Length: 273
Image 1: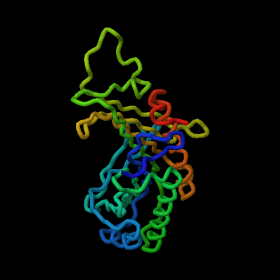
Image 2: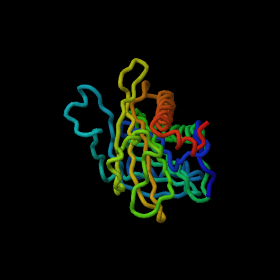
Image 3: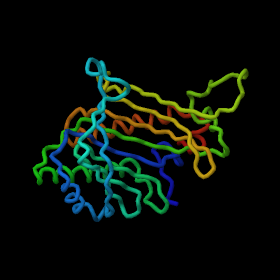
Image 4: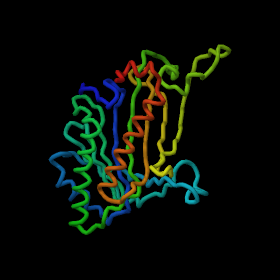
């Protein structure tokens, strides 16, 4: 197994996947361009796959959000332009490209590269972004104008519990510390938590949102809890530096949220410094 990932405040966190991404105004990408771009990154991402495109996601605020249902505003992109996956030789990294999206995944896999820490992941994403920017300029596909920047952290919290029952969430998450009193002791069979938090900028204005989704699942006969944290918003400046600044900010927000919603008992188990 690859070495376990580390976060800046934890020696042994339950992290299993990280995604850095940018959504932008659609480029003039045709069906042939992903293959041409692949030739420029094949040394790093030699395996190619085709997947359905992702829908655009916009975080709206104030009057712009009126009448928009749910958390997000989504419009389906043209189905004829697929999303290209370019996968590293060890399967640990995935570069995802479509006409309005660039994503970089790192995932914990058997024999794969260790998590490179946030700065290493940022450098990998920066390199991929700059390559795509130059490619778009050279092919006259248009300028990359970001509409959203995002980071996602996915953690798998393993317990010793077996069978069909959900692990006790109060052991790991502060929000469940008063889940029930002594009057109720029946075992929990199902659980799902979805929360969204406003992310505010320096002038206290909303600039994005952080989503926290907690769900149980079974793997290898063991019950686990999956925590997915996504921070998403609009960069202050629509250029490479603006993207990098928002990624730094979003990373900090996720780390603070992860630490703030989990318990001292969990922190001790994950080696918080």
